[in-house]
Amino acid sequence: MSILRRFFHYFFCLGMIIFNAGVWAQDKPAIAIIIDDMGYDKALGQRAINLPGALTFSFLPYAPFTPELVENAFSHGKEVLAHIPMQSFEPKKLGKDGLTWAMDKSELTQKLITQIAKVPHAIGMNNHMGSLLTQDREAMQWVVAALQGSTTEGLFFLDSRTTKHTVAEAVAVESGLATARRDVFFDHTDDEQAIKEQFQSLVSLAKEQGFAIGIGHPKSKTLKVLFEVLSQLDDYGVVLVPISQRWVTKRPIPESLQSSGDGSVSYK
Ligand SMILES: [Zn+2]
Image (cartoon, rainbow, N blue to C red; front, side, top):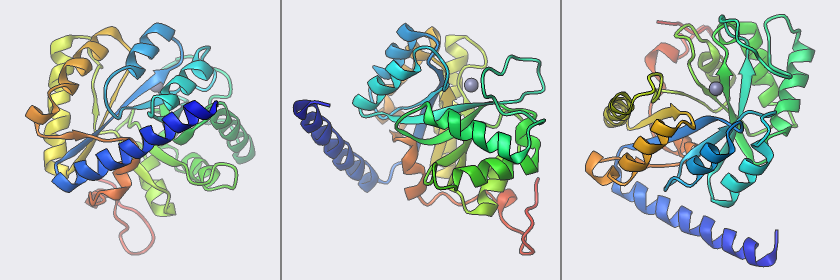
C-alpha cells in the first residue's frame, strides 16, 4: 500500500470510529447488514461494495473474483468475513474444501483453516448452506475449536441459520467463542416488495432486541432496495453498524441458549 493510501485509510478508519462513537451516544437500535455469497459476480459484487455505510461482506474462499473484491471492500473500510461452504441436506455442489459430515476432526480443521486463509482481512466467518452440518454438534465443536486455534484466533462465528435445528451458535456460546445469529434473510424471494418487507422486519427486531442482523446477497433487486432504504435510516429509527459492533452492545444472550447450570445447553 502506498504511503498516500495508508494515510487515507488511517483517516478513513479514524473517521469511522468517531462516527460510530457518535452513533452509539444516541443509543439508537442498531442493524448490521451482511452481503454474502460474494466473489462470483464481479459487477454486482462491486455494486454491493459501493453501497453507502458500514455494510459487511462475506466472501466464498474459492470464488474467482474474491481476491480482487476482498481488497476493494477492505480499502472501502468495509468489514470482511469468510463464507465457508458446509454440507446441506439439499444435493447442492459444495465446492473445493467444503466441510462435510464424513470428515474427521483433522480433515475438517485443515480444510477450514485453508479456506479462511483464502480470505485476507476476515474478522470472522459465517456458514454457506450447512443445513446438515450445523446440526452436528461434534462437527460444530471442531469448527469452534479451529476458530479458537492459534492460526485463526480472534475470529467469530456468525450462524447463518440455514436450518432452525442448527446448534452452531449454542456450541460457540458454550465454548466462549464470540458468536451471533442471522435474524433476517432479505432475499429468499427475489422481489422488491418482499425484500423491503424483510428489511422492515429487521428494523422491528432491532427495536425489540437493540441489535439485529440481516443477510442479503449480491443480486440486483436486493442492492436496489438496500440503496433506497440505506438513505432513509433516520426515518426507520435505526443505525447501520459493522458486524463487529455486535459485541459492544448489551444484547442479552437468548434464554434458549443460556447454560442450564450443569454445563449442558437447553434448546427450544
Ligand atoms: Zn451462501
